[in-house]
Length: 251
Length: 251
Image (cartoon, rainbow over all chains, first blue to last red; front, top):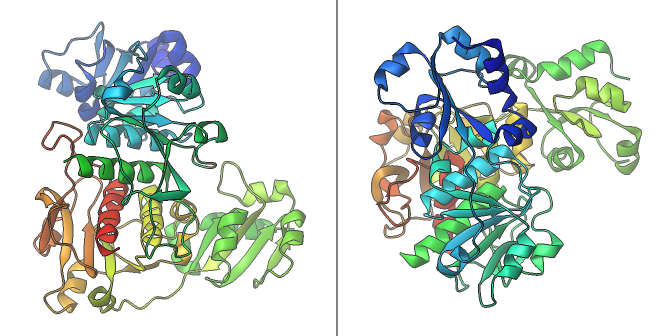
């Protein structure tokens, strides 16, 4: 049975303040919890007897069998599922040298939890292991983002840091890519198998400060090119098209 | 001033039933309303004096000046903006012959309003003028979808129809594309400048019934190809990568 206090604790993880205090995040649903188990330290599992029977070897600091009604009281989802879990937020080192050897993403104040979750899923698909996030980027461990990653969070490392400082810590000659409406056609520009792809905020794009650091301004051409259309693509959509093109060239 | 009844009418448009009865949909915010005016018959504008002063030539069957408080009562947004408008839903003919001459999208039970809005925005960016939606696809005129289109709804026509019947009405030799995990690498397959790109439901992908009709099964390869990653990409993300590749080949 889940105590009132435990339910309060679980539900408090919707708020960043409490996630920070507890250094913990919430994940819900058999698929997602299954993907994250083994990748993050599991502090608590609350699950129905059915789920526990199908997962007899599950390891967690605390395992509580609950009824569907109890689970619904603790859940942040509209449609609670058979299991929820609280995981520890991993401490990751921010080592800029990965940018010298592999393709990484940098997010400059991405605001929407769903967009961030989708971007983490895209990074996973395209074998991008590290995402550097500006301090103004939405928290990757918010329940909405965690659910939107569909488990990709287990395979992609997130680093929150000052992006300008990060770029400053790299020696030169590392390509820094960004998409701009006045950039050069991505299909005609040389790309790379390492460096940083910077994606901007939903409303204002890449900040002026970061734009100055970009060494290769790219454009995703619309069709027919130059036609009057929507002013921009959604940031997750743009990330997908850019990552797909980088990887197509490398294959 | 907005009467209580008028506020009730505006808010009722959140529900499909009332949108159908009234044959009308709601759009909010200066940018979106500005994009849709002139494309759809405007039945009602409710706006602050500031917005009305900046838009003196605006045409609508009814124009009501409102305070911010009144607007907030009518609005479905968390952060109401300076203007909201009710537009008539256009009656569009479903003429399958456009598929013979141009690239079109077909959505097979896409469920999420945000995904549909993003897909309409992608279609606009890539010059795809027609989207055919199965009857089980979420309503394109739901407020969440309308807001997510960012105005692209003005330039892309939506047709709700039985997709199997639509394909049946075409004579043969029209390529029907779809993405599948067992498809062939999109970067190595011949594409086309016309035909139908079918995108599936968020959970189960393309239905078995539609899969039988697909003539060219495509795969968006992950990287490194064949690596264990997320099982799939979000449907809007997949649509973006596919449309970008079709248009890259045509440019």
